[in-house]
Length: 372
Ligand code: SAH
Image (cartoon, rainbow, N blue to C red):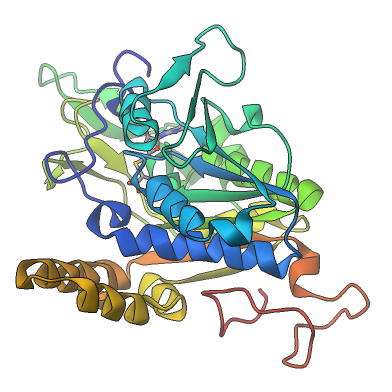
């Protein structure tokens, strides 16, 4: 909702906000994702141009850390035309992103049907802002979605003796200013369309907007090449009831004071995989701690520890490493999931899975995974 929605009004990411995310915890997170993009770019023969497309960039920290890596690898990228494309609905967050990435030097074009804002990064790379992925120009691209899909709205369903019913939000007739959950008395268009015929669970959450977005990414990757990296908390089609709210880093009743709290539901990676079927190959989901370990987080931590002079910085580095990697913190519940063109994983002349003797280089971060 433009006037009343959480992200369009508040969107409190960071210590002073409602929730904190991995890019905000450690610079290493974004650096390793930057290396992932470069690694895929090299593996696909260093195309002459690529777009970095981020969905829901929050404060812009992830892209900022990635652009620092691109700048450090400038000699490698010197013949490549790199541009950044941010898909963001929140006016407030896009301002924060502009400040972070360009120092605030941006041109607003609210009338422009596609990019509503343009600027140049501190490292000289053009940046464009859009409200919808469909407005991003076509072309070989790396698509990043970190804690994006969990923010999109879900439908909730419950299996009953009479068949599937949708869980709806109603005005409580007995308590003023209070909402309540009710079951639809009969089936709804959503129950008819969004439940998979083979569904085994009794309670299901479905995010059709996530399905549409991942299909768009899959179509673009199939046509123009590149890859998508989705990182989020989620499950592989097993969980039932994950819808929850956060305000000031505390759990918040999802029905109380709508628009003031971050509402979120776990990403169902099995649903995303199903929606891409036929168009792209998928890798994962794998746990964040495995992905970051495969990407070399331990080595990067050692270098930063050696380069830091004071113990306070070292403690901060170790603390943020623990937040990202500890299975009890973010290490296990966050997952990485990738979309890649089929030909990136399977040789066109061989129908079977990638073998060690194959000339195709492995996909960084997903080292041990077989094609799913
Ligand atoms: N990726 C960031 C922010 C995650 S919060 C991080 O990890 O720190 C979710 C982000 O998605 C916010 O930037 C929010 O404004 C944006 N967002 C939410 N719904 C959106 C939609 N429908 N289209 C585009 N962006 C959206």
